[in-house]
Image (cartoon, rainbow over all chains, first blue to last red; front, side):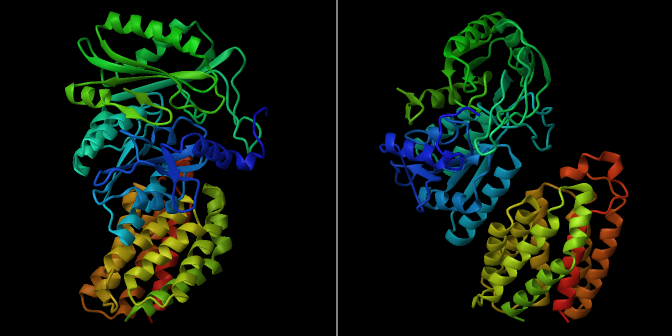
Length: 336
Length: 207
């Protein structure tokens, strides 16, 4: 393991101390717990939006707490869920009478702990909590049929859900309306990723899996979950073609649609390569007759030092477009 | 009956989990990772200790607090589900200082419902619920028929045991046992065993 760290067990808390030092104008913490991160700019009477999940994915999850997006984040250990108490403490701090919406990724540990936190908020403080669980990784499971549970993992596309729900809350919409928008956004985003190298949990000290030097893992999740296939590395255009072939038919995205596109580096893939990918996505979408409203290229949801990237497509209508375009400012996401 | 019934019940559940610790570890080692005996003893011990040390007269608040204590002590999936059951039970009994037999039914139905909802499991999928649900149903029928709590909970314990035995012949669809697919048919389910033990303990606490 080669990492710029001190003691592995201090990885998360020292990262948080650095974040609080650098961004006091956006974020602070509550309940005397560094891992209970909340906005420094609480808005009176606004629906609070809380997210959370394991560490090791910066800018996800906490990086989107700020103006026009999220109000709180429960920070877990590396790839570990936050505790119900942390969820409860953040909920209490973020609520200002209008209720709280949880938006987080589709992982069992997170679901149980957030549900439990919501129970505490309801029982002890009479806070109304609603939940939207995002799961949009097309490589992780088949699409859910009507009335079936969604088994797909939540990955980078959740940022679009944050953005639209955050903008709706900033317009002082009520909890039901903010939840409706979050659900709508979640239903319109699809993601797929590819990994070239594994990542190492600091306290474990070695990678939990391997990818051969000349291979890639198509469809791998952001904790190294198995994807669709491992195979020889191919040219960027061929990789993009294979990913779009899975993503496009899924909603489906069709001729005449308008989308936002996110090209997300997984941690160790240079921006140069991300733009080589973007170039081919642009060409392919033009061929399909799909209009791109805007691109987001960079790191949005990483897996520490994993190399690779993901593509997310977000299908837009007028309502989602307006919310996506609304201004926002957080430590990792700024849009005028 | 008042909140001291909750104290007694949790003490009996904690005791029966302790007595069956090795059995649960053994059952879980066959189909899971073997930690069920530890999480159930640790979790219910924490719940019981909370209740015993509390001067809370609101039975709902006591159950809720016990659930919360269990969730910190046993943060595994099964531990969390059991805590959610206690907390959901607390919700329906909130504000009650006197408990009727119907309240006990309502508490256990809420316990089951919480686990069903949060665990996203249905009956017949070889889980805790396949032991627990027959117990709740039998208890409900007996209480509605006007039987006293000792008789009603004794019947519920028998029904839960039958449910636990029936689960052995079901196919697992959740968690680690599900990986075994058809091979899980015929394996004793540790979750349903926990449910059966809970009803045995409740019957003991209701004599």
